Image (cartoon, rainbow, N blue to C red; front, top):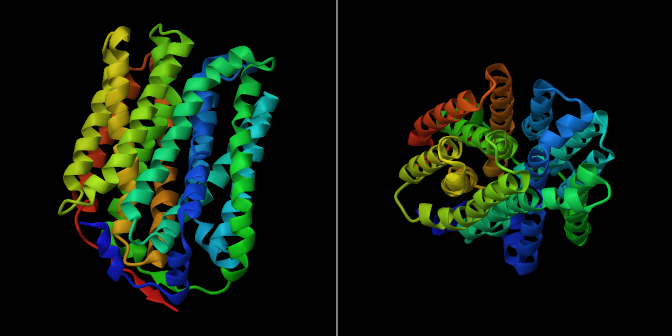
Length: 409
């Protein structure tokens, strides 16, 4: 399937005008926003042992802390379409970016209440942006869906890679230690919000008002399989963000080296994010691409546990290829399975809302299993089971079909 399938999709006059006006600056702005949507996860995981030691959080509360923003990704995905219809997607994204910046900064206070509150606010802001980005791509770049999806999912992984690589060095070099290192990631989020502000002010006033309602998604089998695939691959991703570095450190790897392996993993996620949408849309469907990526992700995470520490980077690379390919494919499928931008926004809300709530159980269960068993063997088996179920969902979600939803004025 090629991106050209979207040329024949139904677009409203407003959407056609927006698409004509879309240019490089808008695309760059979207990529900069996406670059700030994962640092809140990987930055914490690389200094989690220090956080636990300094705050007294036990394994269960540490699991809750790593899971909280993921759960927020699910809960706050549902109101995103309504907020977009009321205020316009550009203005909602601007406000959400400010929430991400404030929430990330709050974690720099270093006390458990602020760690939880900051994670909550950042997760809420990220959730809303996650839902609205596919609709903007569908609306403004109908002929460049694969390219734009690849670029912004690559940026998602880029923020995770940067946070994984530099948080520990920041923690060691900054006077404030790990709280300062965590808070520092609020600065690029604030910068992205300020860069986006002119777009919000310029277009927001035209975006309010009623838009067509979408019905029938929750009765559509294909929509549920897309949702399940999104949730399961996300569960795997947040197990990686939350527990790959602690797992390597538990095995005896030094903190900066563990952060490097996680960063290497996410660098390869970036490369896969850029390549997979274009490659996947060239075939008849996306089933085999999904199955291959689930296989890479599972082998890579298992390799980080079973391989000698000197070869753990191989596991990181394999997992990065698989995990990056999966997030790019999941976001691409939301767009490919939707007939127009309105359905894409609703399917995005459903897939990410329910999917991220499901995903939140991934790092939580991994942490509970780690605390109960005293090793990372059980979390590794959990990861492999999730990959197996995700592969089953991909057999239908990857088919070349469109969700059966009604769009009414």
